[in-house]
Every structure is written in C-alpha cells, then in structure tokens.
Length: 365
Ligand code: BMA
Image (tube, protein in one colour):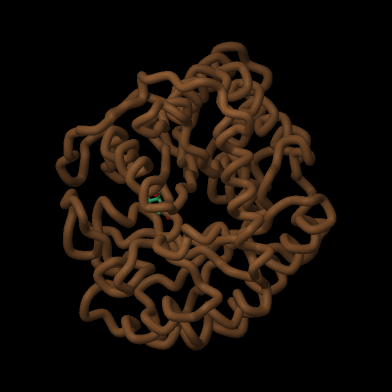
C-alpha cells in the first residue's frame, strides 16, 4: 500500500493555534464530551457521523467547505470520523492521503460548529513497518510488542506520536478539544494483526493497557476511549477481551450490512444483537454506547436510511452512529449518499427524523 503519498493534494493548515496554552479547566475536555454524549442518550437522540466527510467525497478531493452529507442532507454530520494510520511513521498524511494538518483544522472547525470528532487507528505493523494493519502472516505481533524490547519500544514511539497529535487538538484559545479514540477495533474478527486469532485475550488487554499508559504519560486528557468489537454472538464474546472499566468510556459495535436485500436479515439480526449487548453492558457500567461503524457499501437499497438503519437505531438507541468513507478514488467504495445518488431521498428523511442529530442540532446537547 502506498501510504505516504497523499491521494489528493493536502490543503495547508491556516488556523492552527495549538501552541497556545490555556489554564487547566475544572473538568477535562473528555469529561465535557462524555456529558454531551450522555445528554444525547438521555434524549434518545442519535448523532450521525461520517468518515473523512469534509476532506473528500465520491467525486471530489481536497476542496474546502464541501461534504457529500452537507450536499445531500443540507447539514454537516454531527460527528466527523478520522483515521490516524501513518502518524506512527510521522508522515504528513494518513493512509488514505488525508493531511494531518488539514485534519487538525477540520477537527477544530467541527468543534466550532458544535459537532464532535471520533478516531480510529489503522496502524502499521511494529514488528515490520513495511506492512500494515491487515498483515496476518505473523501471528506473534502483539506478543512481540509486549515481550521484545525493539518491537516494544518502536510501538511506544509510535503511540507517543499519536498521543502528541491528540494533545495538539486545540481551540483558538488553546483549550483542548475532546474527542473519541477507538483503538484496536473489530478485534473479535481476525483481519487486523490484533484480531482474535492473532493474540490471546490477555495480550489484547495488555496492548490496550500499554496504549493507555503512554497516553497518560503524555498527559492526554481529552480522549474518551471506545471499545468496538465487530458483530458478536453474545455478551461473553463481546466481553472476552474487554480491557477493564477504567480503560473504556464507550461500548461500541462495528457491524456492516453486506449483500443488499439478501443480506438484510443477517444485518438486522447481528446489528441488533451486538448493539443490545453493547447497550446492556454500557448501562450496567455507567458507560455510553455507540454504533461505532456501520454502512452498506454502494447503498444498493435506495431506502436504506429510513427502512434499515433508522429502525435499528430506534430499537437500539445509542449516542452516535458512524458510516464509513466515500472514497474519491474507488468508485464503488461509498457509504453516504452524494448528489444524484439513489438513496438521497431516504437520507433526507433520515436527517429529518426527530431521533437523528446532525451538526446543527448538536447545540442542544
Ligand atoms: C477501510 C477501507 C480502506 C481504508 C481503511 C482505512 O475500511 O476504507 O480503503 O484504507 O478503511 O481508512
């Protein structure tokens, strides 16, 4: 994978104020965001999010002031989703070509318009940095991070780069912007080097703890931690690798809809089952719940938003839902509508649902 080359030209950062320091606030930025997400939950409202929304879309890349969601629903999403893959190598752009400077500016812009930001990390393999998150030939990578000093210290350096990026997310007055971080996601599956068949439950938990220790050492206090298994059969599977209450703020679920109409019963069953578990364990522990990733690639069902996603959210209210990216360079890789796309009407109706919140509605929470 060509990771360093920006797939579209980055736009230079113009309004970074991250060097300014503010007086320590009474509550951390993370606590403030937690309160806003809890308010959403209390109102049975779901914030809508989209990955890489303001930096590229199905037919464009690198413009400013654009968003496929804005151009179809009339509003930016409530949550902007981002990926930090390649920050580990101190690259200037992430694995999908998004400049980290541009991302930092967009995080601040999203905060200014009242929305919030969520992050994943498709990190490379610290045992062999020439390979990526999807490298499965070596089933000892997590164990090497924990037991091999060279791999371990490379991992620590990489995670320090990431922690420093989060520390740099600031408003113009220097105060930190609270965000959600969702490390080591979809670990109940086995498609990333931290997946179920690639490490033991104890090693997975230790990986999470080590990540957190580095963030704590770096003074990161603006991050809410989201745990996000892929679809699960039951609570036991969901909790098998749970790192512990002191490490997690949000109980997530990543469940995709594959196969259009034919795959609908499976999606409905698995999304509802996994969200029900996430909501249950969240309620028991005083945590938030989220539909941390979902979507139906290429949106083969024109009514998907109101006929499929909305009923699942009504049945299983969570604080937010995120759909994945509209890749500008892969014509069939999109999860949100764009002007002229078949599901636009359904998406507008989804937007108009009193249960669903976009950026403009976030001022209430
Ligand atoms: C995947 C796909 C990839 C992308 C990765 C990280 O689901 O969208 O094209 O590189 O996420 O964003």
